[in-house]
Every structure is written in structure tokens, then in C-alpha cells.
Image 1 (cartoon, protein in one colour):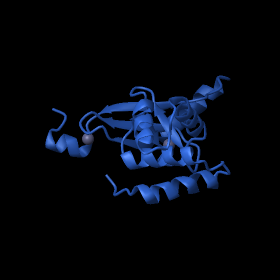
Image 2: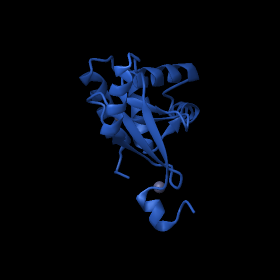
Image 3: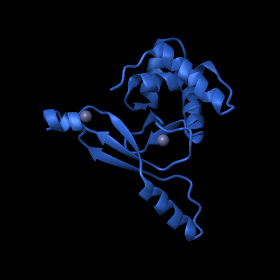
Length: 151
Ligand SMILES: [Zn+2]
Ligand SMILES: [Zn+2]
């Protein structure tokens, strides 16, 4: 897991919003920074509790709206199988992602999988309008597999 300081993450989060021409609000910045800082997916409630504790949020619906917004913008991904959110590792370009979800440490790695782009093109070829596609793969990361953490 990479070293992660909340202060620099906040600056990064503001920059990510500004780069896309999105309004930088304190809550958007804090949600992004908190997800970065956690280094693992967070559920909406868990995120709300964190932000509430630091005085950044007072009502859950505001946090949910920000999460929906950031997901629609491709800055975060929702992991359906965990009902949790994770920061996108490649938000500078559109992509279909595969998520490797470790049941040992709870870590998630995002992989850009070219095969998914092909699947999306095939679906689109039938006239189907693809809105969202991702693959969530569960198992053990290299570290946990080596130490037997998930056994
Ligand atoms: Zn992504
Ligand atoms: Zn692991």
C-alpha cells in the first residue's frame, strides 16, 4: 500500500476536480481524499461516519449525492458486490475496469482489461447501449496468498 498523507490527498482531489472543470466543493474534496486515504473501498455509511467525525459532513444524503456524482464523473467506482466505493486509478480516460478484491486484507486493485472493451464493443454492436460494465474478481492478493492471511 502506498504512503498516503491526508493533506496532499486533499490537494490531489481538488486538482482532479478542477482538471475536469468540475466545481471544487469541500465535501467533494473530502470524499475523494478520504477514499484515497483509506486505501481500500469504503461503504457510504462508513464514509459518512469518517467525514462526520472530522466535521466535514452532517447528513448522509449529501455524502450519497457526492458519491453518485463522483461515480458518474468516473472519479470513483462503485463496487456492487461490496456496496462500497473506491477511487478510480485511471480517471483521466474512459475505461472498463476489472477489480481484484482481496478477502484477506480488503484491498482492491483496479485493472484495465482490454477484453472488457471488446465485450462492450460486441454489446454495442447489437444495438445495446452500454451504460456500465465492470468485473469484480474475488480472491487473495499476492501478499495475503503468500502469508496465508485469507486461509
Ligand atoms: Zn477506473
Ligand atoms: Zn490481501
